[in-house]
Amino acid sequence: MSHHLKQHPSILQLVSNSSPETITSWFQSSFLIIQLQQFWKWVVSKLEDELGDDLNYNRAIDIPGANEFVPNELREIKLRDVLRPEQDAKQKELLHYDVHIEGGMINDVSDYEDGIREEFQDIVDENADTEPIVKDIQKLLKKHKK
Image (cartoon, rainbow, N blue to C red):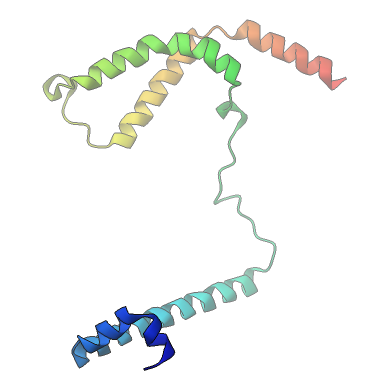
Protein backbone atom coordinates (compact mmCIF):
# COMPACT_ATOMS: atom_id res chain seq x y z
CA MET A 1 0.00 0.00 0.00
CA SER A 2 1.38 3.41 -0.90
CA HIS A 3 2.48 5.87 1.76
CA HIS A 4 -0.18 8.38 0.61
CA LEU A 5 -3.07 5.94 1.13
CA LYS A 6 -1.81 4.97 4.60
CA GLN A 7 -1.99 8.62 5.64
CA HIS A 8 -5.51 9.04 4.25
CA PRO A 9 -7.59 5.96 5.09
CA SER A 10 -10.74 7.81 4.00
CA ILE A 11 -9.46 7.74 0.38
CA LEU A 12 -8.77 4.02 0.66
CA GLN A 13 -12.25 3.42 2.08
CA LEU A 14 -13.79 5.54 -0.67
CA VAL A 15 -12.01 3.57 -3.37
CA SER A 16 -12.62 0.14 -1.87
CA ASN A 17 -16.31 0.75 -1.16
CA SER A 18 -17.15 2.37 -4.50
CA SER A 19 -18.09 1.02 -7.88
CA PRO A 20 -15.74 1.58 -10.78
CA GLU A 21 -18.29 4.04 -12.27
CA THR A 22 -18.29 6.11 -9.06
CA ILE A 23 -14.51 6.16 -8.92
CA THR A 24 -14.32 7.16 -12.59
CA SER A 25 -16.89 9.91 -12.04
CA TRP A 26 -14.99 11.20 -9.00
CA PHE A 27 -11.71 11.29 -10.88
CA GLN A 28 -13.34 12.99 -13.88
CA SER A 29 -14.86 15.65 -11.59
CA SER A 30 -11.54 16.19 -9.86
CA PHE A 31 -9.77 16.41 -13.21
CA LEU A 32 -12.33 18.95 -14.46
CA ILE A 33 -11.86 21.09 -11.33
CA ILE A 34 -8.10 21.01 -11.80
CA GLN A 35 -8.50 21.95 -15.47
CA LEU A 36 -10.81 24.85 -14.57
CA GLN A 37 -8.36 26.10 -11.94
CA GLN A 38 -5.51 25.94 -14.45
CA PHE A 39 -7.66 27.69 -17.07
CA TRP A 40 -8.51 30.48 -14.60
CA LYS A 41 -4.83 30.95 -13.75
CA TRP A 42 -4.12 31.18 -17.48
CA VAL A 43 -6.89 33.81 -17.96
CA VAL A 44 -5.55 35.89 -15.06
CA SER A 45 -1.98 35.67 -16.39
CA LYS A 46 -3.15 36.81 -19.85
CA LEU A 47 -5.05 39.73 -18.31
CA GLU A 48 -2.00 40.69 -16.27
CA ASP A 49 0.13 40.53 -19.44
CA GLU A 50 -2.39 42.62 -21.38
CA LEU A 51 -3.14 45.21 -18.69
CA GLY A 52 0.33 45.54 -17.27
CA ASP A 53 1.27 46.59 -13.77
CA ASP A 54 -0.51 49.96 -13.77
CA LEU A 55 -4.22 49.29 -13.15
CA ASN A 56 -6.99 51.85 -12.67
CA TYR A 57 -9.52 50.77 -10.04
CA ASN A 58 -11.36 54.10 -9.83
CA ARG A 59 -14.50 52.70 -11.49
CA ALA A 60 -14.56 49.61 -9.30
CA ILE A 61 -13.83 51.02 -5.85
CA ASP A 62 -15.85 53.75 -4.18
CA ILE A 63 -13.78 56.19 -2.18
CA PRO A 64 -15.95 57.54 0.64
CA GLY A 65 -16.75 61.21 0.49
CA ALA A 66 -16.08 63.64 3.32
CA ASN A 67 -19.82 63.92 3.97
CA GLU A 68 -19.83 60.30 5.17
CA PHE A 69 -17.67 61.11 8.17
CA VAL A 70 -18.82 62.77 11.34
CA PRO A 71 -16.58 63.18 14.38
CA ASN A 72 -17.64 60.81 17.15
CA GLU A 73 -18.08 63.65 19.60
CA LEU A 74 -20.51 65.44 17.30
CA ARG A 75 -22.35 62.21 16.53
CA GLU A 76 -22.77 61.40 20.20
CA ILE A 77 -23.78 64.88 21.35
CA LYS A 78 -26.10 66.11 18.63
CA LEU A 79 -27.30 63.27 16.46
CA ARG A 80 -28.25 60.91 19.27
CA ASP A 81 -30.55 63.54 20.77
CA VAL A 82 -32.11 64.43 17.42
CA LEU A 83 -32.69 60.85 16.25
CA ARG A 84 -33.67 59.12 19.49
CA PRO A 85 -37.43 59.88 19.21
CA GLU A 86 -37.46 58.85 15.54
CA GLN A 87 -35.58 55.61 16.27
CA ASP A 88 -37.97 54.76 19.08
CA ALA A 89 -41.01 55.46 16.87
CA LYS A 90 -39.59 53.33 14.02
CA GLN A 91 -38.83 50.44 16.41
CA LYS A 92 -42.37 50.63 17.78
CA GLU A 93 -43.78 50.64 14.24
CA LEU A 94 -41.70 47.60 13.25
CA LEU A 95 -42.50 45.73 16.46
CA HIS A 96 -46.17 45.52 15.47
CA TYR A 97 -46.06 46.04 11.72
CA ASP A 98 -49.65 45.91 10.46
CA VAL A 99 -49.58 44.97 6.77
CA HIS A 100 -53.09 46.36 6.25
CA ILE A 101 -52.20 49.80 7.61
CA GLU A 102 -48.63 49.98 6.26
CA GLY A 103 -49.52 48.95 2.69
CA GLY A 104 -48.31 45.36 2.66
CA MET A 105 -45.31 43.33 3.64
CA ILE A 106 -41.79 44.69 3.33
CA ASN A 107 -40.52 42.93 0.20
CA ASP A 108 -37.05 44.40 -0.01
CA VAL A 109 -35.44 44.94 3.39
CA SER A 110 -32.44 46.74 1.86
CA ASP A 111 -34.68 49.28 0.13
CA TYR A 112 -36.66 49.74 3.33
CA GLU A 113 -33.46 50.31 5.32
CA ASP A 114 -32.25 52.80 2.69
CA GLY A 115 -35.55 54.63 3.06
CA ILE A 116 -35.09 54.81 6.83
CA ARG A 117 -31.55 56.16 6.36
CA GLU A 118 -32.81 58.85 3.96
CA GLU A 119 -35.63 59.75 6.35
CA PHE A 120 -33.23 60.00 9.30
CA GLN A 121 -30.73 62.03 7.25
CA ASP A 122 -33.50 64.50 6.38
CA ILE A 123 -34.41 64.78 10.06
CA VAL A 124 -30.78 65.38 11.02
CA ASP A 125 -30.36 67.97 8.27
CA GLU A 126 -33.50 69.82 9.39
CA ASN A 127 -33.07 69.62 13.16
CA ALA A 128 -29.43 69.31 14.10
CA ASP A 129 -28.33 72.89 14.67
CA THR A 130 -24.67 72.36 13.97
CA GLU A 131 -23.91 75.79 12.54
CA PRO A 132 -22.11 77.04 15.69
CA ILE A 133 -20.05 73.85 15.84
CA VAL A 134 -19.18 74.05 12.14
CA LYS A 135 -18.07 77.68 12.56
CA ASP A 136 -15.84 76.67 15.48
CA ILE A 137 -14.33 73.87 13.41
CA GLN A 138 -13.68 76.24 10.50
CA LYS A 139 -11.96 78.69 12.86
CA LEU A 140 -9.76 75.90 14.19
CA LEU A 141 -8.88 74.78 10.68
CA LYS A 142 -7.90 78.32 9.65
CA LYS A 143 -5.85 78.73 12.82
CA HIS A 144 -3.90 75.49 12.27
CA LYS A 145 -3.29 76.05 8.55
CA LYS A 146 -1.07 79.04 9.30
